[in-house]
Image 1 (tube, rainbow, N blue to C red):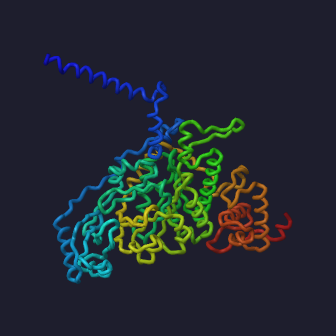
Image 2: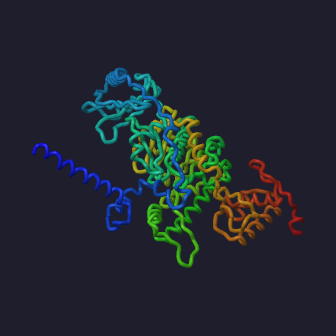
Image 3: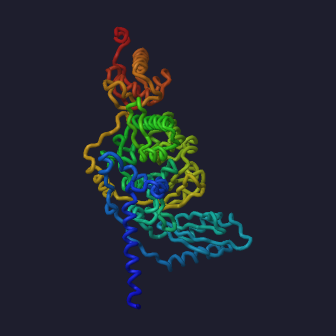
Length: 550
């Protein structure tokens, strides 16, 4: 009897395992359509599995492969000298007591760039007493500068952040291999860096939904942008996310050329950049019209319905619907664009920032000149998420963050991140990605798509002899007859005034910079005016007599 006792459980366990395995295999089959579990899984996972849902109907979509994690190098961990940290904490306490401030060190956190010492104030000690001793604290700690959080949000303590003597490198490979990366699995979860506690920080552009980056030259803006773009390339296929890269500096975005994710080649001409932003506005409006027509509130609902096969063209229509991809517009230097076409650029950025979230179009705007002329109040009001790298003054910090603090940063990727849903800035050491790593990732995508087909008209450079339906970026949607009439009016204005000025066309014709610039380009193609010569008016090649003889 004793020997036979263990046998029944063995025979019971094995069939259960087999049945469980059979159930798991049979679940996706349409044998039991009444079960609710698969439906619940689709609804729950939808916001986090946009990437998987995009690899759908066409053979090409199913052929994309994501780059391996081995392309990104991970940094070696550096040991923390705990004795040195403890000694610096004691030095801080003694320095404050020497100035008559009663404090007690309650905690310390060693981050990649700075160490935060948390101090509890004695009875009757005012917070302002500590903040007034900022320079004395920096002197006592032999630091270039210190940042004081008075108080730390959510704690009855004051935080004093002191730069570390030896900084730790935070690589993009570290973030992409972290536990936080496994949770942040949306295609638009972009890597930002590590916080003071060593946790990886990701920002979801789909919920942010736009990001403003600013800081002085050499503070780490371009490295941060490269990390953001590379993190998108590591987890999103070209069918999920499309990019428009605007690079007036001409050297930062060149390495991403011929990438299948691009809607157009990296834009380096400020005039074409204004056209690209205007194209994004038109695309936004087209998507809103489609959502209204189909009865959906946003891109998530539309794509979910598309995946279920519920989106179909009408009986009398020959339209074919496609799954909406996300579009991320990256502007590396806003200052150059504002110098050339401030009104049009600001208007396009404002319209995208106000409305484009629901249709999956997101902006990342960077500048090294954080002044009110570049980061206008209208732009700030519509781009709530900001990342401030080191700046030179409190005024610059206020322009970016609406608060001081960025002037205390130590540079080389040290940043304050202000997410759109909070007014408390988070100190982060921005991550770093080597140029060779970026080239490996880009080459991986190029190998999968040797020939890249860009979307025509993004830069507004379509030839006037092309088909009539493919007009360029304009301030309004006009037909060919109105465009032809506008071109004739522009030609008459230029010839009779003998001045080839784009700004004159803006004033006289009541059009924006983008359309006036295109009209001037068409006049040049037709031999009416000469090429552009800096900021001077173009030479007019046709006389009034020749014009009247036409």
